[in-house]
Length: 267
Image (cartoon, rainbow, N blue to C red; front, side, top):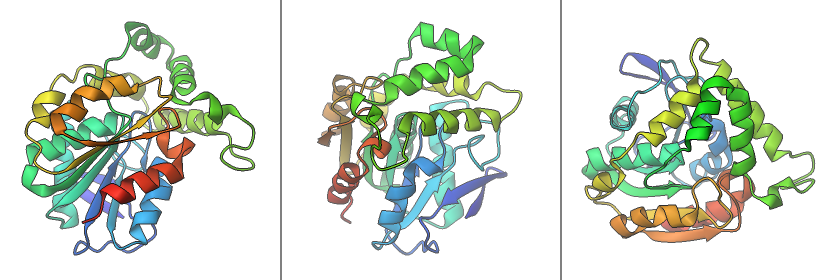
């Protein structure tokens, strides 16, 4: 469905169900150069099990209008505006990678409006190497290939994983290139990674969160290794789940992730 937030059109995938704001709401927030489609399986699963689901396209990503959000604080406020536009008073925030920091900000800015916070593939700080930022500035497609390689563990490279005809690396590369092309005249890849790299408020935000929290990590994650999530685990006093996959948790271990979130998101 489409929402109007801050005078801009925002797309929200509702998991194949008509959105009902009276149901417990879960908001999914994607990572850099992604869109709502990375949460398709999770969104459908929860939407068909008694939840109202909003898998959002961040501004300038997917079907949402631009320009992109400039800071994590702005992104958190925008996410809360999406709740207002959808007529939702409280939500569980589920964010992956860059989206995990936006979810954290939203839960911190309005603690009374969060009933759970789930951070997937997160880190504090979420530092990006100078080499990657430089490559993103000058050769964004090459930088995408670098990120794509490090986002998937070795198991994802096996033929027919997770099923016949599936090619996780190719699908993710295509998604990133499509998202980059969707905001012409701008280097969205660089902006997304600068947004992550420049955010220093994660632990201060965590101190303001009042709801239960869950951190889900990939044992083989090379982008946000488990040790990088520990400061947030401790600050949030979060329960944790560790899956046998890399940074692309939704694609490499969809069932394991669904089970971890189902255990956490029991209203």
